[in-house]
View 1 (tube, rainbow, N blue to C red):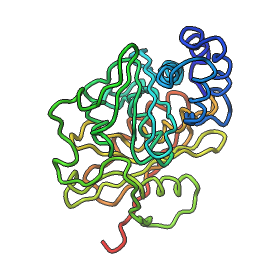
View 2 (cartoon, rainbow, N blue to C red; view 1 turned 180 degrees about the vertical axis):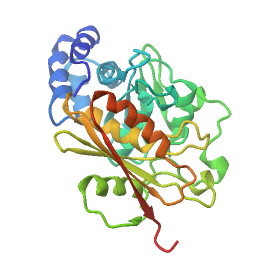
View 3 (cartoon, rainbow, N blue to C red; view 1 turned 180 degrees about the horizontal axis):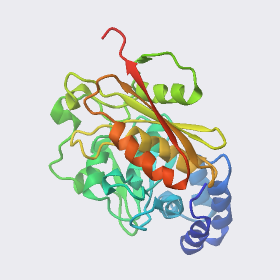
View 4 (cartoon, helix red, strand yellow; view 1 turned 90 degrees about the horizontal axis):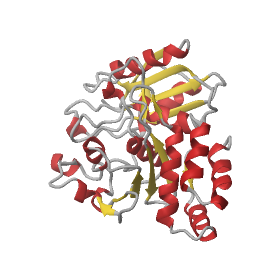
Length: 314
C-alpha cells in the first residue's frame, strides 16, 4: 500500500493520460498488490492509451515514488525493474530509517531488484529510474546475472546499457564467482535448534536462497535471511545479497522490508523481526539488523530474535 496515497494521485495526474490514471490507482492501491505489474498488463495499458511500453514503465517509476519512505532526506525515488524470466515489471522505492546511519538506506533500484528476485526472476532486462542511478546502485546492479545486457531507461532518453554507466566495472567474475545475484540458490540450511514458528521458518527459507558467494567471505559462508511480522500477523521475508564491492550489499532485513512496504496495509506496522544466519558468519548481520530495529521502535515495540543455522556436513 502506498506510503503516500496523495502523492500517488498527484503523480498520476501529472504523468499519466486521463484514461490510465484511475486504472493505475486501483491497481497500485489494491489490497493484494505486491509491487508487480505483468508484461501483459503493461502492453494493454500502452495499447489502450496510445503509449509505448517504455512510456508506461516510466509512468510506473514515477508512481513508485509514492511508496518511498525517505525519513531523513525527504527525497523520494521510484524504480521499475523488468524480470528476464517472466518479463513482468517490479516496483521499487527508497527507504531511510530515522535515527540510523545513511549507510542503512535502501535505494529504489535495490528495492526493485530484490522485489524481482523474491518473485523468482533469475535476471533483469531493464530498469527504469526517475534519475540516473547513483554510483552505489550501478555497482549493485552489476552484480545481477544479466548485468552485461541490462538496459537503463531514463525519462527523455533512449535506454542504454548499464555498462555505459559503469565503465571498466568490477564484479563477481573478477572474484571467480560464476553467475551472480538472482542465480537460484538452495543452501539446505538447518536451524541449530528446531523452531516451527512461521516467522522463523520464513527467515530460514530466505537464508536458504541467499546470495553470499564464498569468495566474498572466505572460509565462512555468510548466508542469512530475515523476516518481519506485522500487527496483523502477516510475515514477509528477505535474503542477504552480498556484492563484489562489499558496501553495496543488501541486508536481509532491508530485503524483507521491501516486501512489507509494497504488500502490507499502510498502517500495519512491524512488531517482530527474526534473523537467521549461519553460525560464525564473518559478515555478521546482527548490528545492521539491530540498527534498523532501533529505528522501527520509534513507532512502537518491536522484538528482535536471532536463530543460528548450520550447513549440513560442516
